[in-house]
Image (cartoon, rainbow, N blue to C red; front, side, top):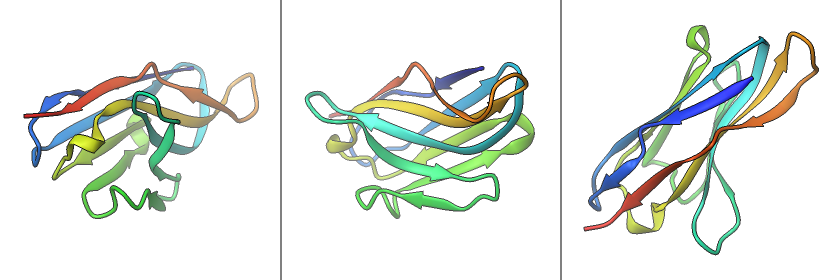
Amino acid sequence: VQLVESGGGLVQPGGSLILSCAASGNIFSIYTMGWYRQAPGKQRELVAAVTTGSSTNYADSVNGRFTISRDNAKNTIYLQMNSLKPEDTAVYYCKGRIRSTTRPYEDYWGQGTQVTVSS
């Protein structure tokens, strides 16, 4: 099972970006998928998560600015990020709780994508 993120980059304050994360491999089912981020010198933190039933939760710092969505047919989640702030600068990681065809539910991580908010 692999998770591959895309969509990071450099954006000015107040701008927008969309991140994507696609899961592939011997997937039997996917439970929760989410986005985490880690800024230099800080711990990795949850940004947003979505369940199979599309229930969502967000960190207080991004609530109202970020939107997580999920396409179950494509095993893909998205993170629409609006009104970006310099403090949103971090490496963004995708995580999925996935049951493969040979193993029970486990957490899988993507390789991360850099988001830099700067003028």
